[in-house]
Image (cartoon, rainbow, N blue to C red; front, side):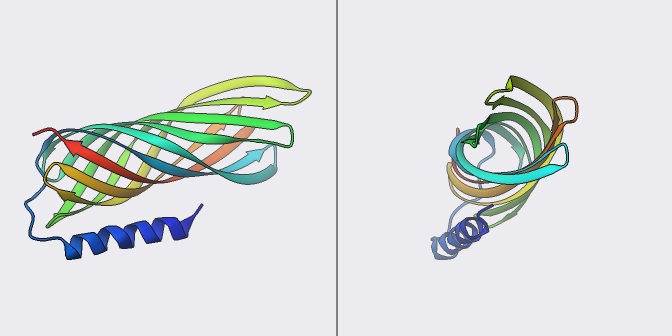
Length: 183
């Protein structure tokens, strides 16, 4: 995973918050957003392990009824790989609750929920398969908001077991997103 990318993003968001003029608290309500993601897959196939990274995107829909609580659904294109006769393409739909700590225009938050993942596998000379499942997901994030507009950086994680437990994968995603709250 590109930890320099994540660290630079968090520092950039905090710098924006420090330089921003006085702003009001985030407005609660419905919000939509989208962003870019970088996903690291740590794959173990019957005792043989490897990892790869890929870029993708994220779509966000949420509702924040209270200053400290939000509910969110995300579609995440996790990317995949197409190397050495192995092709993998993955995506996930997540539903999470976010617990937020608001410090001026900065939101620190933790998320917990469920991820419905879908992965298509193809191995040259062997064939192809598709598998999906539900797994717990969790993560942390930081965001800044200026009225209805928000910018956030976050880390999310979940694990999968596919094809009758033959393929175990740890999925780590870092994303940078923009949201808009409808007032």
